[in-house]
Image (cartoon, rainbow, N blue to C red; front, side):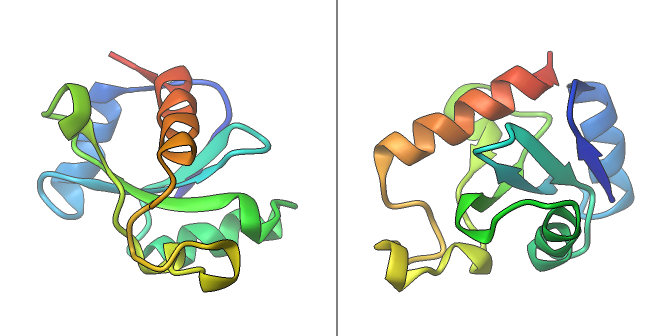
Length: 113
């Protein structure tokens, strides 16, 4: 697992995917710090790493990245850590479209294609 604070290439993500799940890389995005953790077995592991580094749980959202895909297919909003009824999110996805846009903006800032 590693925390991405600056940049990571699609090629690096593709190599990670090949070693783990074949076509995807799990990631957790910190919307406040605009960083993300990648390359963990579980989103919960990445979430724990970010929490250890000072992130706040309400700012963390789990996604899957598909390095071989482009556009809307590159990011999938699906993680058990996203189940947050207290924050109004009642699914494994990210129900708020504005929140989705913020997550995609952080991913686009960090991932070079």
